[in-house]
Image (tube, rainbow, N blue to C red; front, side, top):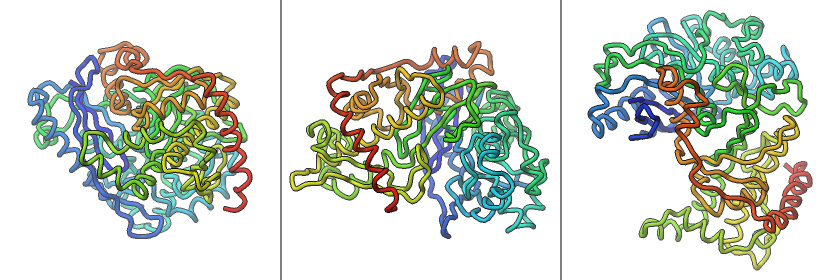
Length: 501
């Protein structure tokens, strides 16, 4: 068996796979982030480990044989969360979570040292802001100098969990690629950046490839968690990258999208343009020489949740009393509304926009509300606006890469809605493919373990063998033609109102 941990922003998910990469069991445990000051978002590092231990106990209770049969363990985590530790591996402060934006002044200092063009050419990150781990490194050095001096290594979240399991201080390259101190073009830590900001490069752990055996888990950890002593930790990949792998997005030109809280799009390429003035975010893929263009739109499914929470209390009550989810009920209302939502168009930038424009001040806006506008029109307009946002980012990717995208691998909670998937197909003019295994980040981590342990010859072979298309939605030509007007209005709306923000 293979055990994986997908450690997200607010929950740990542990999953068991067999060696043919079929998902056997999953267990999830949530936690609440600590936000005691403006821009500060933290979590006690021990919380991650406690949730891991809880999930393992749940899995072993359901599958007792796993205590003997787990051979490999893979980890995928959120990117950018930073944890300074001493030589014993003890966390010296709370984890600074990726959402934390405290390092505003430090990011300005870094921008004075490296302009945006240089920074993007080295890192694939459009600009250095207070969210970047490199800015947080400088913040710790300036604001917590005693802690900085005591720090043995600055670990990212996956690094920290690997260290807890094995005692080894290592990182992996897909995770490092979003830190601002990783040279994505040269595929190594960016020494010049660390030197210029005065951070000792010895405090950054060794950068390994994805899917590399690190060590067997420590005997005391095996005893604590009830796991086999011989189980080996394999380096994983950042969650977005692991998710692309699990979605079989490993060949140039393949595109996957995840409609969850945010809308995340990923397309594989081999020769990204690090000089393009539009500076679309580029990640390092799980294999050397391959990359992911990843535009991330911060508000997607969260807009639907907002509308549900504020305006659909009756549907929530109906769902609680019946067998359908509230989102299925909302989907039925959207389906009952006409294409184009009776002329209603939504600009879904509720917390700003990063791509295709970078405007953190942007907000949401409904255009076309009339006395004949019903709740179903609002819900359909939300579905359509996320599809419009998907289309505009795909067009941006196609213009940068010169590659025509034929189909879209669809993941996340949004992929469970048939009406939403059909709308996406009609708006984009591309086939939407729903994958059989939706837990793609966990599957991606399991793939890396399976390849490392010799069950498959390559990640490409493993991905193709472990996940297939479960359902397809192809564009209806008459609907695609009808959506051109709504899409044109959507594009014009931002241009007309952006100065008001």
